[in-house]
Image 1 (cartoon, helix red, strand yellow):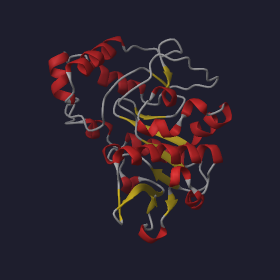
Image 2 (image 1 turned 90 degrees about the vertical axis):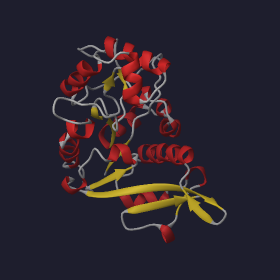
Image 3 (image 1 turned 60 degrees about the vertical axis):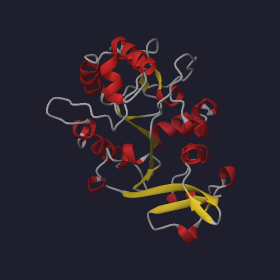
Image 4 (image 1 turned 60 degrees about the horizontal axis):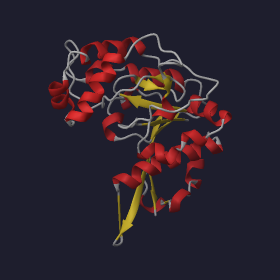
Length: 254
């Protein structure tokens, strides 16, 4: 079983990363291609492209201009420790031990607009580039077209070594859309987390995102290999709700 999650918009850039094992992103040449295009955007143009404020645009113009190869521990840090959004608040990667990080390296992937797909211990340089950004790359109208089937093929190569052929989708719709489900050589299982409000269950973004991280942490710490064992997830008050779940979309409620 392989789990996929989304990256985070916010990053932790100033921290000590002590992970004896690190790796390089698979698609660094593609990332460099995107960086060269992004460097053509000044602050006003980046604001328009990404729909962000001047401060964020200025920050990312600086990031794109300072991005450079080769990556090394001095200029890049492990992705799983750098991302800092609600999903990662649930994951709490900094508290994982080395054995747990090693397990995550083999069972978890982070989708990325810039890097395509990232292993947890891949070292990356700071960036912001959401998958839904309408960035034109040559004749490719956006990032979905740019990445094409590369992310799907990468997942299939990884899936070949897994005993249970299940792709667990804990990513947002924006990022999952970078994958071609018809070409995935595995069952695709999605987990959704909902809150009870006045007798009805609904997805609340801030809670749902954190729950994805909690589920990811549960998988890593318990070395979950079989999808059926996900039903034992009961973190933060959630439980598997069989009544409203479907075959390939499992709902956890609280």
